[in-house]
Structures are given as C-alpha cells and as structure tokens.
Image 1 (tube, rainbow, N blue to C red):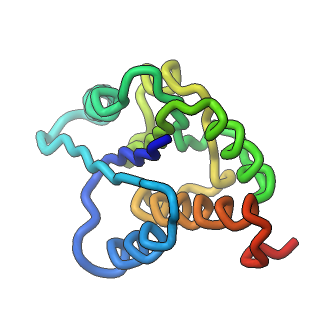
Image 2 (image 1 turned 135 degrees about the horizontal axis):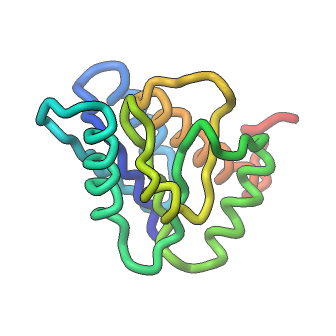
Amino acid sequence: MRILLVAVGRAKAGLHRDLEEVYQGRLTMPLTIVEVEERRKLPAAERRLREGELLLARVPPRATVVALDERGKSLASADFAAQFSKWQGRGADLVFLIGGADGHADAVRERADAMLSFGPMTWPHLLVRTLLLEQLYRAQHILAGHPYHRD
C-alpha cells in the first residue's frame, strides 16, 4: 500500500516544510506528498471547484480516499490508528486530500470513502499537513506497540 497526501497549496522552505520532512522521514511506510495549486484569481466557489478537480485528478484508480474536512469525524489517536489499520488491510493505495482556504468541493466529499476532522477549530492547510503526518507516525507506533503514544 502506498500513501499519497494531495494538498492544495505549496509549502515553501522554512518551518512548515521542515516539520513535514521531519515526520515524513520518520515514517516507515512510503508516503508521497503532491501539491496542487490554482494560480488564477477566481471567485471562492469557482476556486473550490477547480481545486477539487485538481485534487481528484491525482487520485489513483481504486484508492481509498480520506478527505480532511471540518465536517468529518474526529478520532482519538488510538481510534485513528485502528482505522488506519483497516485502510491498510484493504491493500489499496490510501489517499488523503487536503483542500484550500475555501474547503472541499462537493465532488471531493462525494468521492471520499471517509472524512476526517482535526476538531471543530479551523486549521491552516499547511498545519493540517503536519498534523496528519504526525498522526500517521503516531498510528505507526501505536500499531507496533511502541511507547511513543501515551494514554
């Protein structure tokens, strides 16, 4: 199983990129980050639709798709690890989609096999990327019985 994180926006050199690289480097599973971006000045609704098209264009056939979305389900880390294990068991590629400032298009939500939220607060999409990578790292350790995670 490959893990693909497809995100709207570009992480420039600096703190965000450095944190991503720290957690990505700690993962034992293969993970690829793909950045998509619509550079044209578009009204919010049009931008959201276009970003949705760009995200969905990067989803491999038969992949399990998880959209990071404020309307998604919030999980404790141990529950996320258990769900991650189920996704792994499917054997298909696992794709996490992170939208831009205006959220996901309806087409993204409709394609998603699951929607995940990091709580009711609004998070900048660059921080969501790092939060997701850390939770994947934590899930890896929970599933391996490593003491990194403490309840």
